[in-house]
Image (cartoon, rainbow, N blue to C red; front, top):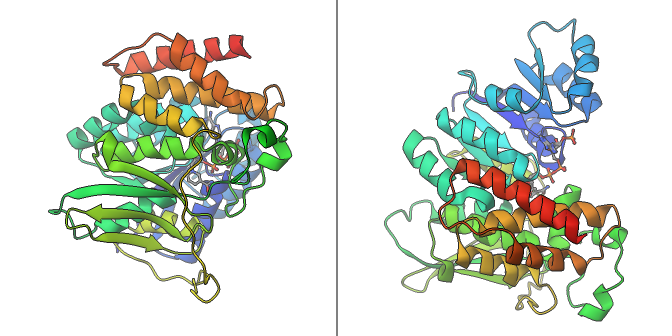
Length: 384
Ligand code: NDP
C-alpha cells in the first residue's frame, strides 16, 4: 500500500486520538498532513510536535496566537484558525483521506469541501449524513471520492458487503448496546443524572455521542446514516439491542442468508479499516474469544421509553429537512442536558416539538440546511 496522507478533523477527540494510535502502530502506512481541534490547543500542539503535519487548524480563533508562537520553531507546520481554514485544508493536494471526527453539524461544510475536492472521506461525523444525506451522496457520486464508514455498525455492514456488489440487500440489522439505562422504565429515567448517562457500559466516547447512546438517539442517527451510506429504503433498516456489543451489525441478502461482522468493542478496528481500505492491516489489538463471551443476547428496543428512536425513524420517513431539524434539536437538547438545564426525558420532548414547529422543506439545498439548523436552534432554545 502506498503511504496515505491524512487530514484528521477533530484530532483531539475520542476518535481523533484513537486514529493517531492507529497511525503510530502502522509506521510508513500513513502520513499526517493536517490536524484540527476546536479549543484544545495544548493537545493539538503536542500532536503537531509529534506528527509534524503541514497544517494545523484551531477552531477557536482566540487560541491561534498561543499555537502560532508555540510552533514558531516548526516552520513546516502552518498554523491556521477558524471554520474557513477548516474547509480549505481538506482540499489540499497532499491530502488523500479526510477523517471527519468532529462533532455535530459543524462537520457538514468541511465534508462538502473535501468531497468536492475528490477526497476519500473516512466518515465518523454521522451528523453530516443525517443532516444532508441526499446532497452528500449526490456529491460523492459526482466527484468520485469514496465514503468509508468509521461508525462500528456501518463499518460492519460495509465489511459484510465486500464481494457482494451484485447481490441485492434484503435488509440490514443495526445492533445497539441499549446504553446504561437499558431495561429501565420512564419513571426510573425521570431522575437520572448527567454522570449516570455519561457512563457507557461498553464504549469510551466523547460526551455528545455518549448521551446520544444513552437516549438511543445515537441509534436513530445511525439508522438515517445507514440509509444514505448503503442506498436503502426506510423499510430495509431494523434495530436490535445486543448488550455485549460484539456483533457490530448484520446484512440479510435476498436468499435469507445473514452476514455479520464481530469483534471486541474497540473503535480502533473500524478506524483502521476505513483508513487502510481496501487492505486489512495487521495489528496487535486484543482478540475476541467466544469463551470469554459465552452468551450473546438480542432483544427488541424499548421504543415507548426511548422515544428518540421512533422520532428518528419518523424524521427519516418524512425526509426533506426533517432529519436536519431532528439533529439540530438534539444537539441543543444534549448540550442543555450536559449543562443540567433539561432532564433526560425532556430531551426527546425538545426534539419532538422542534419537528412539529420548524418550517418543513421537501427538497432542501445546501443553504437551506444552514437556515433550518439556525431556525431549529432558535426554537429549541425557546423551548428550554
Ligand atoms: P469528541 O467530543 O471526543 O471529539 C470531538 C472533536 O471535534 C475534538 O477534536 C473537538 O475539538 C472537535 N470539535 C468539537 N466541536 C467542533 C466544532 N464546532 N468545529 C470543529 N471541531 C470541533 O467526539 P468523538 O470523537 O466521540 O466523536 C466525533 C464524531 O464521531 C461524532 O460525530 C460521533 O458521533 C462520531 N463517532 C464517535 C464514536 C466514538 O467512539 N467516540 C463512535 C462512532 C462515531 P476540541 O477537543 O478542541 O474540543
